[in-house]
Length: 247
Image 1: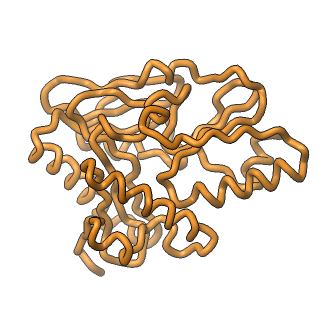
Image 2: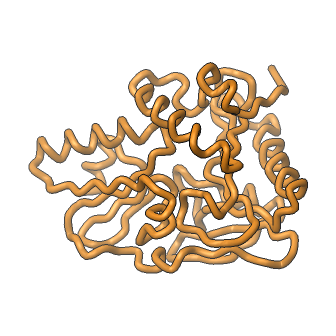
């Protein structure tokens, strides 16, 4: 098995796969949207590093100042996603990717690295136990969600003030969604279809700018669901998951 890692660049963006949606045809429209999004992010210092294999082994991070997440800080790197799946687990790839990010932060003179996690392991969020082994500590929290950071100089990032709301005025099913994850396009399609079938009012809010991403009224890492005015989950929904939530 390969030990070679590749960083996505402007030169190889169109020819390299993006890992997470590699084997699922229904997400291919989302892959192209992701690539268009990356074209604007890469010049900002955004990093997408993956194993040179046909599998889901990658890390994605960016300077916290330009990270599309409601996290504030100075001179930190923010990890969007660290994913090792299937037969690639247990081979040290996750450790290698995280250490690469940490070393990258040090080489750039950054103050540290931060990541969104939770008290108990949740889908689509980095495992707290894993990063804690590498020195990450809780620096901010809202309900069961936590911002963890590895600080090199004692400074700390924090959630945007808007996160503390964890709610909105509208009682309708409302989903804030970003443009980064290839899964989003298909999830939106399934949710819209299910709501149309059942006559459920649906409010979709595209988080299509850095300013919007920094001011989402809840925890957000590409996706945030509200129902009856209350925040529900960051987990992306297909039709079955939506019906389970509504019931």
